[in-house]
Amino acid sequence: MAKIFIQPDADGDLHTAALHNDKFQAVLNEINGNIDETNLKFPNSIFTLHSSAGLSGRGFQGSDGGYSTQDQRYPTGWLYVSGGQYVHGWDHAVDKLHIIQDSFHKADRAFKVEKVVVGIMESPSFTAGQNWTITVQTSSGFTAGSTWNTVATQGSIDLNATNQELLMYTLTPTSSAIPANNYIRVTLTTPSGAWGEYESGFGDGNRGCPPPFWCNIVCSTQHVP
Image (cartoon, rainbow, N blue to C red; front, side, top):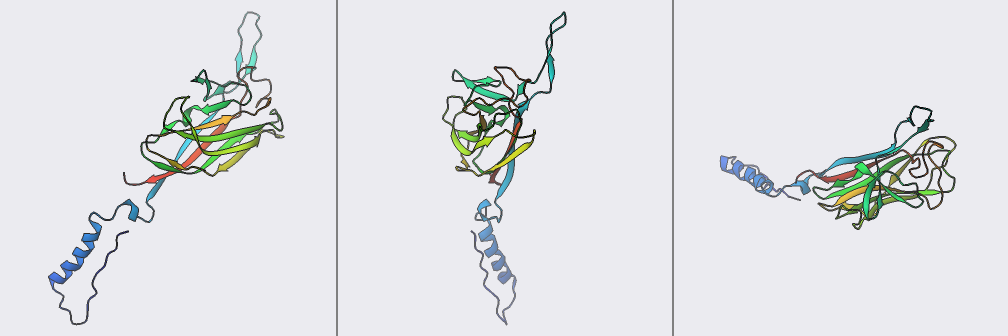
């Protein structure tokens, strides 16, 4: 922190131009080259990384000519890993990690995760006692095979409820520093047992019917590059 000291006047001092110039120069000497973002009372700016995934609106599957149609909803905005690669879509399997597609961000400069706020929909069609897990992760690499480390996580999420209602959590980061050029993503892992569907009868055996989900990652970084 820059400290500015000015010699106080005394009674009888002759207030010449030189005296005033010396005092102003003392201020300039401290400001020029010494005061930067670390001297500000609030040196960091706040920004939010938002992402979401869920389901399409209802639509009919089938054709004319005597074929029956089926009212279905399709997962949207999800990725999962298969064969070491990202695959677009949803896998109904148990204990399966899914990634919100638009949650991928690359840090163009270092920043800090202050908190994570997530919303996920409960439903009576989900199996009671089956726990979901939400995790925010970071990595120096982007690929599915990269080593992804936990920034914040929330487990033991039972989505079975009487009605379809919004469930919200605030996650406190356990490792908040995101280095420059690192990546960040948000994942949702299905329970270890059969978990049902968000809307019974609107999914299929492979894709399932996952819960609508959103995430806000509140971050901070210095104002000045």
